[in-house]
Image 1 (cartoon, each protein chain N blue to C red):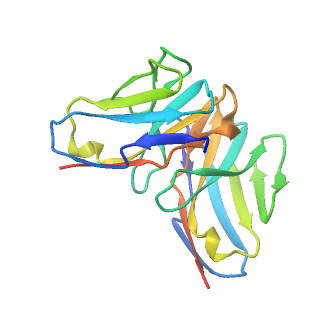
Image 2 (image 1 turned 30 degrees about the vertical axis):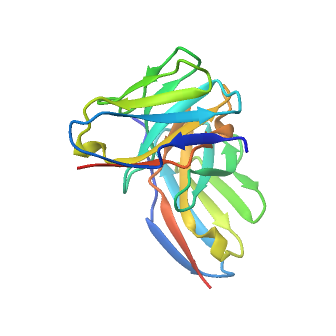
Length: 109
Length: 113
């Protein structure tokens, strides 16, 4: 079955640095990928998505990169701020969503 | 404010007790979902519904039942709670096919002792 995993469970950065969060997936038929942010005590919130026919997509301070050859995607956050501290999940879809474990991002002022 | 509302936010149950978690959405979404979130694991789908009066099993349905009597409400029931059901439960809703448009509630933290 499909599984989605994250390389690092925690990531600590200094304010102003760029952050990179990675995600590996196993189902090569996955055609849609989403990154979610989950703050403490809240449900996941959509950040950015990408379809399998793209390899890069940019949003406000965030970029998602997709490498279908190695089944890997990453979320880059530019100029990380303390308000970015949260758990970040990737999710993949072939029909319905499968969620990764989550990376805890801590931003130190 | 539009969104998904879950009640209660916290609950402690004794083993064998029953309870119902309520999810309500006011966005007229057709699809609704119940997930559980455990440490070190991603969100896992328990049950879902693609419309009023319909339900289907997800990845981890055992020990849970659901009902969708009204479009806006999706209930998750535990008939005989077990410590393994200690978790944080999230409800979500979406329009059909709108994977980007999942809206999540703020969660229910359930502890079974």
